[in-house]
Length: 250
Image (cartoon, rainbow, N blue to C red; front, side):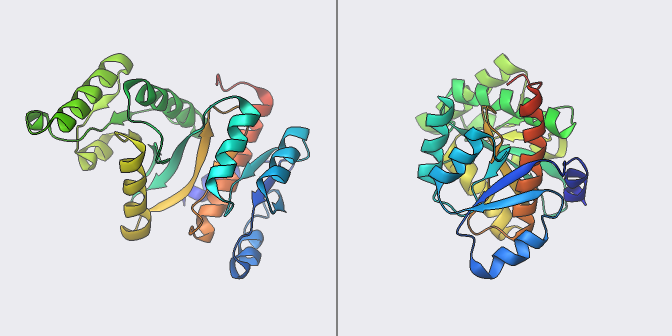
């Protein structure tokens, strides 16, 4: 399984904090699955970021802590607005990087360009050669159907021209036959695609990394299964090794 490949790259010496409260009935089950590294449970954003910044942990997973204060804590700690890209897999088991998944992310040419650059970094972390597709709100021939659709299509064309990513318009199914990284038109559509795939469509999530990667941080859905927590901790462990070495170019 793909998740086992991630775990093989983790280090036992890396300490990862998980934000809680994780639902009581899941906490023991999750912790038993994380024997590949040292894990500590934290109950609030302030404590987890203090531990991260003072070095008593090397990375953190948001877990079921509220998103808004965690995102603000990231901004204060790093001086950057956070953007998140998730590691997903289709129902058939194909893994791919996907973003944005935050509802207030993406939606402009510059934001999509950032996502493409972060997808390249994420791919390098995974040891992949990045094959990046960008999406927009319609097929090429739909450009006259509405101003909103036209703007989205032109944005996809421009991002493709600037970055070299392939523009697959609204055809995500075609994009995933080639790409291993997919950039949605904006965070709302990205979040809906993520939820539809993972919660309704038989796909899976292994967590989402925070960018720019000044700190090793990952997200999980608060409703995420055990496997999502395992994947997010493994990703954070790998990211923490890279951040410590400062060799990720980010």
